[in-house]
Amino acid sequence: METKRLKNVITFSPKYGYNTTTQVCFWCSKELAIIQLGKINDEDIKAPEFMVIDYNPCTECDEAFKKGILFISATNENNGMPQIVPGIYPDGAWCVVTDEGIEESDAFTEEEKGKLLKDRISLVTPEEYYKLFGE
Image 1 (tube, rainbow, N blue to C red):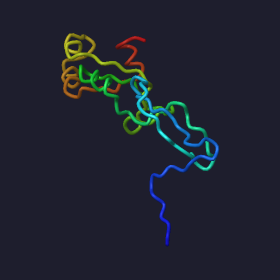
Image 2 (cartoon, one colour):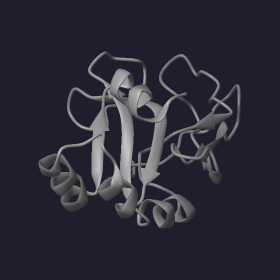
Image 3 (tube, rainbow, N blue to C red):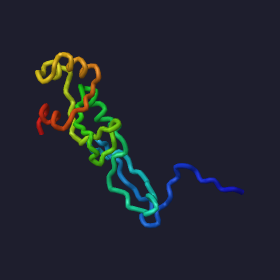
Image 4 (cartoon, helix red, strand yellow):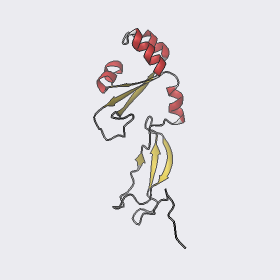
């Protein structure tokens, strides 16, 4: 009888066993899940203690994002983070501005305000981000 290997089966690590990591929300660092990685590559390296798996927000962040327009500081230089969109890497700084805050702001033209209110998200350079929101 032929044995077939199932896809996505974790190979137990001889050095680290289940070799677990804690998945965290990129946006707020909330711990979300324990993930078993097992043996990683041929080198059998130890899993990091915490790991961002994707940019999907946790429930709390998702609720916060619904309260306004999400501004994300991002760069086109590879900073070690996964790309949030092709060629763009977030640097971890973000904030949510209410619709009223956008409408009352003098930092944007009327055209920009309309686009922000429609799109609900804006990727800005770190320089633009800190100019708008400070540190």
